[in-house]
Image (cartoon, rainbow, N blue to C red):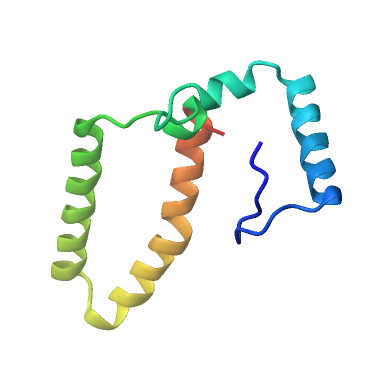
Length: 109
């Protein structure tokens, strides 16, 4: 435990006791936490390093291709005064709903 605050001044007795209490509680709750986080400088705790499931390049390229084809279709087929409301409905309604459904289906939520 460091005996200085973030601004460099020495800790007073109350701050030191509070930090020791936090350290003791953490050590009691998870005795392996200290070695796990402190033993390898620069190596992040596994849940921080990777959250969620990595996406394959094929999936990302497929989604980008479908989005590009849809944008081209909108540009060529839909009158210009209708394009903006359609894009807004899709961006703020259908796309988030689709993402939530996909995440629920794949077990991410």
